[in-house]
Image 1 (cartoon, rainbow, N blue to C red):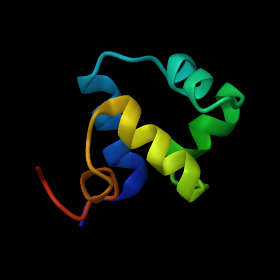
Image 2: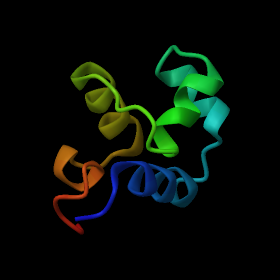
Image 3: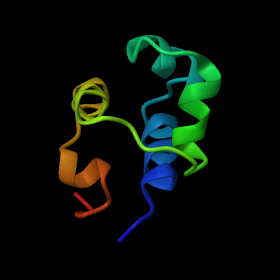
Image 4: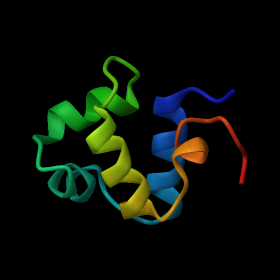
Length: 68
């Protein structure tokens, strides 16, 4: 299983989005978002759903449970 922070960074880069753009979609500060990618913190369920919708991926993919 892929670490969440690593998967999140990979998806963001594949979709050509910046950390700032992603933080804005989540309505949070850039530094707080960065802690997700660093693996320091994990988002709430609501934010996970927002991320999956924003990046057009499944929650299982986002969480590293599947590779597609």
